[in-house]
Image: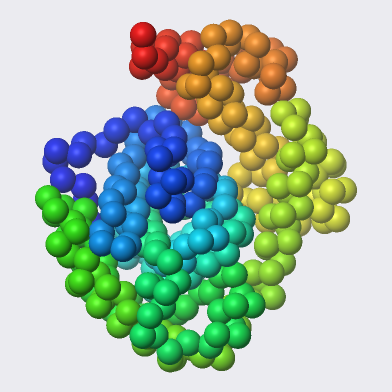
Length: 312
């Protein structure tokens, strides 16, 4: 089981290191969906020609962003319970996702789910691997199935990388293990369709929801507004949101606005009331109550702690 070393105790989670963007990491924003204090650990190291990123947090997190088009990203997930589901695409811990275009990502990660992203240029990741060039070139993201046992060597290697004082020494081992696993999976699924009709439907709804949220900016959205925008009945959209996010659409958009307010407070905003109004919360007392219930601290506490971390 992968756990961080004692010296890397869980840190209060705020945002991803912006430097990861320059090192080929997906450009992403994280939204906390579950209520309660959020903690996480993150690992990001250059291992020879590969960038290895891994992380885990104790709450459900929605990740949105874009992948670096200059890199091929090999991603997989696992958990101590050996049951891992990323809700947006419904793939489990036996799958590997290969992303090689600047596409949008929209994924909900369950609590205590360990995610890993290994990235490098295509000529390095795919060297020596027999695969369909046409499928690879026309499909920005491939999902390759396999057995959990088949993925275990890579999981064990990532564990060693995270705990090793000098991860670069394991670069040849990482390259060999990655190519062996990818070769076997491409050979077994050379003609597999990358996404099912259900995946494509979810992707369409996700894109429409993203467009809707941008159009609405920071203002509350009613269930009627959402249903009209995506062309679905209230009962259907309620079920879809609960399956995907664990909450109804009205609560989902409120949680996104709370996360937006938190981001502003973490990045220099000094007026809690102005932040609340900006994100569509007209009643300051209710905003503070919902904020504290969701993040485990008041907006003022977030602002004050962020101010202390600012350079003098």
